[in-house]
Picture 1 (cartoon, rainbow, N blue to C red):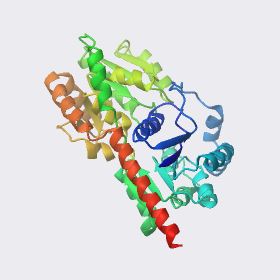
Picture 2 (picture 1 turned 45 degrees about the vertical axis):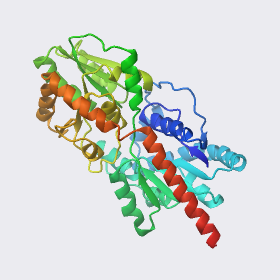
Picture 3 (picture 1 turned 120 degrees about the vertical axis):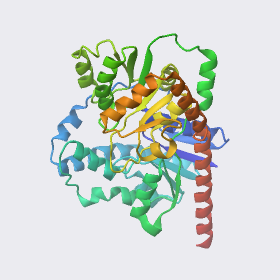
Picture 4 (picture 1 turned 180 degrees about the vertical axis):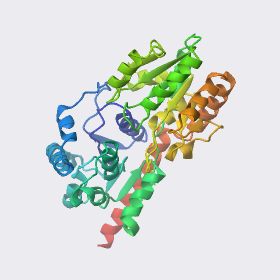
Length: 401
């Protein structure tokens, strides 16, 4: 089978890039032919930059902002479409896998001009993303109907869809109704063997400090600001601890300033910045407690990559009791799950783990064994099954016509 994989984020930074790269790597291990657009380059870290155009657009009327974003992105996608058309003509794939992006009309265009089965990789419902974005800025969304229905129009083009969570599947099925294509839930994964090999090569750092770690984007949804708030109390009550923050984003500058002005936090919080995936995994292996304090949202349809990698690292986890996290982890068995809006509950969960090495070890071991159910090999195998279904279905339809 020959697969063409179109993913604009393959050479970006963070979880989106890791997801695409790992899926590509494991699919190729099944001896199928797979070509990517763009070609995958060596992984690099990309420092967060404040984009002047995006900053200016935030203060525009919502209708103007939506149309400008739509036009700017599709100019870029149109240029990419030329390369896609050329590749399809020469490579002749059996199936095309496309990661959906906000405002990207590529699936709609390809559906019109080719007869090759299309599978969509859907990691977000962008109309909900836009709605949440407006809510965070306390603005009322006034979105043109064309753009608000764009997700639905794109999903209708698919012969198959793979999503990262059950919640996202329910959202799509509620929109498509009886006309839903094959939809497979394929969560993010982790490389269990990576941590086994790392443990064999490197001894844990000797330190009396209990290290609390966070990996992710420094934005409002990931809850890094909540973590720093709670850690202020932790640092006062348990001075033998240190908070290590790996990542970057819009909140970093404000958080660094807040820490520098707070005498309880000076020297207790370390901002690492963005790292390569390998560097991040190495850091995780030396943490004692790992935290995923996502803030509450009505539709928590994410599949947090970091949570599964926390599990694979065999570390004690404190995470928000939301969505897929609550489906994968069991409170008190392989993690401590908290209400992210309750600082006291959050603080008590961290204190309980700081004070009990036995509890940290128990939860970490249980999480590690649970992680064996969520590997990239399994994700790629499930995706390959979806490819085979849609190709077989398309061949049957073509024979009938």
